[in-house]
Length: 74
Image (cartoon, rainbow, N blue to C red; front, side, top):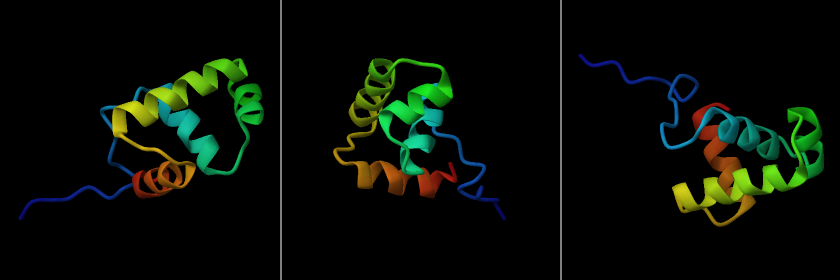
């Protein structure tokens, strides 16, 4: 019998750790500015991370990003 990892332990190899962290903040309802302040980044860097996430995973809306974050247990 093979063991299927739960979403909480399933990494997203396509996303860098900082992209995952950014995704987690946005999915929690934080604004770009709040996320930037918490992560010690500029708002522009947060925007760049989110653009990369959308491109890498073919995601177009914040709702899709939030659903992904929940699925991954972020």
